[in-house]
Structure formats: structure tokens, C-alpha cells
Image (cartoon, rainbow, N blue to C red; front, side, top):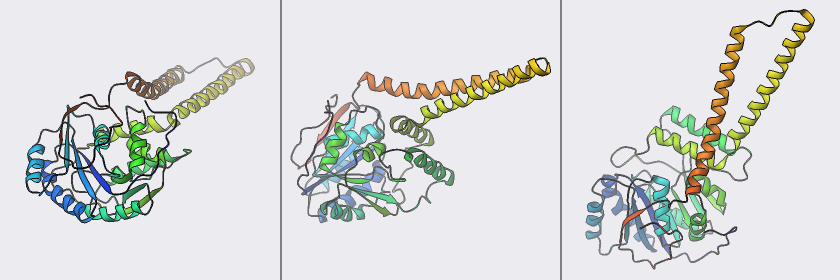
Length: 336
């Protein structure tokens, strides 16, 4: 169980782990792994690659085995989760298994350029705790989706003590002390972009050009993006609850004012209370607003319910460990 405060010292800077949570990305990894290994070898650091199979059903094991046979030595950990737990949980599993002094998290589809790795390492060695590549543009995304993402980040920023960089994703290099602090956070439902920002530390943003996918199609459909946005809002913002309170106060004030007007009109002017349509419309409007407010409150209660169950973030089915980096005691205890 994490302590009420976290104090971590800066460590050595001689090894790096690359963590890739994947879901049916074997075709992309067949091309990506040799490029990644060659790039890491040129850094003259000790390195390992941690691949987390998040419940995929493709030939990932065969692709990794073929890659290992093609190398003089293997530095790969392959974790297979018992089912699909989602990218956030799979990424956490990879971070927990990583042993490097620095940890680079990236996707397995080839959109994150491996050519950027030496620059990320250079900034890290110069003293940055997190180096976060940020896409220069989102031209590869549908325009409507890009507008929705910008609106989401604007909504998340206001009034918070920390800043979530717009467009920054899980592609980032983190110092070991950042990873250890991240793994000590107790959330079961994890919005990683918010957790990175909440931790703070010395962070550098680095623009880059998103590469086309090497193979296949995205495994993150619109439904999951909406779910992730909902998780982020309920995990890191109280704005919806405040809006509910403000809406309730305004509606009550309006109802009081309108009721006073009707009372005065009836007593002074003598007009009978009329307007069945107005009454019915008002009842339906208020009923809809009440249900909407209850839905907002229910989202927050649902998060409390998930946290209260204290289930593990993931269940590890199998770990094939050919890494040559020295072992570390995992921060999280996964259910084997």
C-alpha cells in the first residue's frame, strides 16, 4: 500500500526498458522489433524490450520467437495477460516488469518513430525526468475527432494545479523514480495521461511527426475513446458535479422567481392560474435535468465502487523472460 507521500532519489542512467502494450499487432511488430533493437544497440546502453500481450489472439509469440532467433542474444520480456484488461492496465503491467534506469513506453504499431529514441535519451541524461514527444499535427485523424480532443483537454485544464499537455500520449521516456512513483499510486481505474501530469517532475515536450501504421488498423475505436474521456473526467475533475450544483441553484432560483410572479399576478391582477402545457413541459424538463444530474453522480459513484473492490489491475497468465537486465522487485503484486 503506498505511503501518504513519495520520496524518490535519482538513480543511475545506464540502462533502458522499452514497454509496448499490444493487442493483435504481430504484423507490425515483425517489422518494428528489428528496427527498435538496432536503434537501442546504437545507444550503447543496456536495454530490454517488454511486450505486454493484452489478450490478443494473433501470432505474437511466434513473431517474438522469430525475432529472438535472428539476434545474437535476446533481451525481451513477453507478458501475456489472462484476457483483455485495456491499454492502461497492460501499460501498468509493462512498467511494473521493466528493470531499466529509464523506461520508454510506446505503441507497437510503428507510429512512434524509433529514430527519436537517441534524442529522448540525451534529454534524459541532461537531467529531464520525463521526455514527452508531442505530435506536431493531427492531420492523420478525422477533423471532428481532433476538435473533440481539443475540447476535452480545454475542459480538463481549467482550475487544476497540474497541466495535462494536449495531444501528449503514452509515448514518453521516464526516469526510474518517475516509474516507481507512478506504480505507487493506488488507483485501480487509471487515466495514465492524468497520472503522469499529477506526478509533476521535470518534463520536456518534444514535437515529432506521427508515422503511418506499419500494418493493420487501430484497436482503439470511438467507443473506447469516449470511455477513456469519461474515465479522465471522473478521475481528475470535479467540474461536472459543480455544474450539477450550479444548474440546481439556477433552476431553483428560476422556479422561485416564476412562482412569485404567478402568485403576484393571481393576487393583484386576478388572472386564474393557467397553462397546462406550460406545467407539463416544465415537469418534463425538470425530470430530464434530474435524470441527467443523477447520471453524472452515478459515474462518480461507479468509480468509487470500482476502487472499493480492490481487485488487481491485471492477471498475468504467463511471463517469458529473456531479459539480461538485473532483476528488480516489482512495485505491484500481480495475480499470477
